[in-house]
Image 1 (tube, chains in turn brown, orange):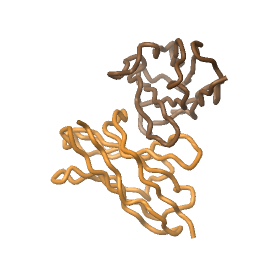
Image 2 (tube, helix red, strand yellow):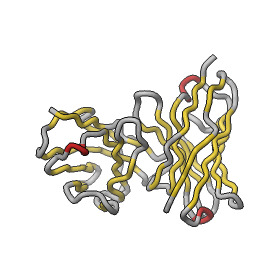
Image 3 (cartoon, chains in turn orange, red):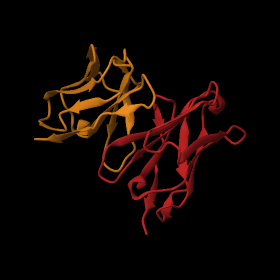
Image 4 (cartoon, one colour):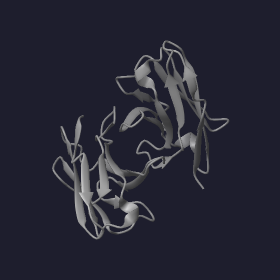
Length: 106
Length: 115
């Protein structure tokens, strides 16, 4: 299963609302998760199974889906949100990541 | 507290072998899926392999199938990745993760394949 993530990079300002999209090449139900990675650090899972926030993840993060298109939305960007984001389809082996989206401060 | 910690990375020549280890604690290791993910320098995340907790079934990325073997020692709560026939393109930080859905990550261990 191929996963196409867009955009590859994104510039935004504090307080902005941004969306990142992953499109799967075939139906995967709700089996997509989102990860955040900061420079020099290991990734951390933000959301599992499309829309379920991990404990401790701020409510300004949300996930949704429409068919094979999955969206990560960040509402009201904070300084700590500037990072790289990845999606992962975990419906069928081999699992596959999206290409990543680097979110930068404008 | 869930903890996973990788070791065993280093410099190896093309065609060589290396075994990575991952020490796990804070959860019932024997019943959980465990995975390996890698990240080449400056690149994105690349799913490598998983071993399922329910029956020890294993799955691999096409790029490593036949060369890498995932296994675990239930007596010591340790996950392994045996890497053979290493290539320059296997150079990456290798992360051990808890769960097939990658819910907890180690800090990674760097593998460099170079002559």
